[in-house]
Amino acid sequence: MELSLKEIITVTLVLFAVVDPIGNIPIVLDLRERLGHIQSEKASIVAAIIMIVFVFVGETILRFIGIDVNSFAVAGSFVLFFMALEMVLGIELFKHDAPKTAAVFPLAFPLIAGAGTLTTILSLRAEYETENIIVAIIINIAFVYTVLKSSAKMQRFLGPSGIDIIRKIFGVIILAISVKLFTSNISSLIQF
Figure: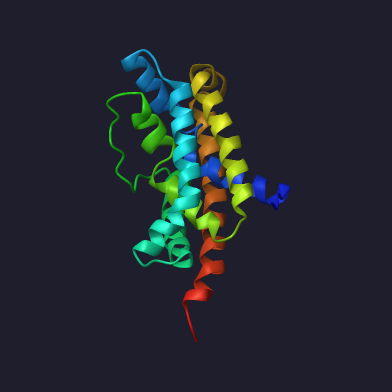
């Protein structure tokens, strides 16, 4: 087992930026207002299970359909790049479906463990040790649970401009990570 504090911190920050629990506070508040109750515990546990299972079987699924991790990491770097542009520039590139119920869907999937998160997990597998990714997932889920439980208080504390600033900061972090993922994986795909 190769636990590395540096890797855990890096992966935690990347996943935190992609999951974007702070930026999702308005969606959570809207769900709470419309449906009355949010199942924070259930959503957090299901999201953790989805993410951890994907760490182990995601690569197998890729191999089954004939895609290597480096190719997936490069593709994932593009997804992260465009997500970061959305966060930094305040534009919408991806269509976000309006949630209908607040149980496993849409909190656990796709809000917490969505396509961007799963793509990021597989992309990170090309760079970091599995144990460090799992620890980072658990740290993120603990934070997500805290945010879900205290979303109304956080919104009052941060205000709209505070939430916007945090989104932009994490957008820049995702942008840098996407460039790193691209440059470190593209060389193995291009043969000179």
